[in-house]
Image (cartoon, rainbow, N blue to C red):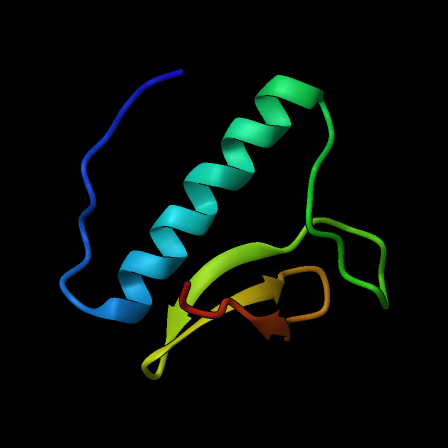
Length: 70
């Protein structure tokens, strides 16, 4: 697995990048995508949008849920 540095400068961007890295790690390690959109059963993608970190459904272009700070 390739390592990379955090590119974002705001909290939402950092949360989205960390969530994306964790998602990639889990997919590589266990061969399954998580989390899934409850409406469409496809993988959600971590994004930062308007100051929020979100899991986003690209299939139907809607938010899945917020990525909360620890």
